[in-house]
Image 1 (spheres, rainbow, N blue to C red):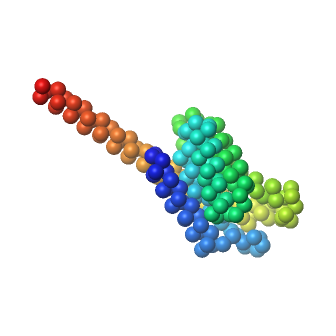
Image 2 (image 1 turned 45 degrees about the vertical axis):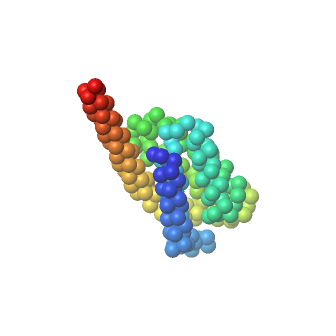
Length: 187
């Protein structure tokens, strides 16, 4: 995918994240069930897992900085988390390219880590007095369930876009060959 298309897609997914958070706010009192959207993160990980490690870290770190500045207000936190998870996303990139189940489960684990790391940091610094089971049942269970479906949908959509780009590139090559043959026969 071209960088311009990737930036537009990530921006749209970040805006969808923010819109869902606005329409269905997270219940931090743990009295009801909440859904924490990570559409942009899932799309980011699907777009960068096949790149080199430095590209993965830089692109995901940049998205983490943008998330910190525009959506969360905690400047270094998501930069570090996104960059670390961006690096981890490509560890199994050969297996992820071959088997979509490995890609699904690795992305599922990355989404879990995206929520688990801030929870554990808050527990260590004692800024939250909630048990793991309460947090998991009220925030993470619904989040993981809906993100499992989202991961499958985004994998399908991005595979279709890649296939479309490949077909388009193949057609351009055929057109160039036809032009070359036509030029050669005219001489």
